[in-house]
Length: 32
Image (tube, rainbow, N blue to C red; front, side, top):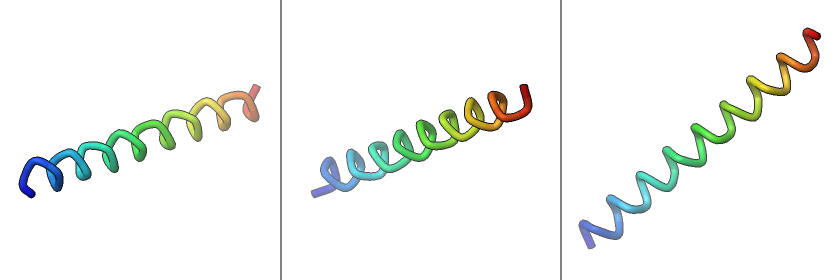
């Protein structure tokens, strides 16, 4: 179970990073 929970946390963190990256690119395009 530890491996599964650890993988779940990394997956959530990865999704969060991807969302932040997309938001940053979106805002940069709006500024330009």
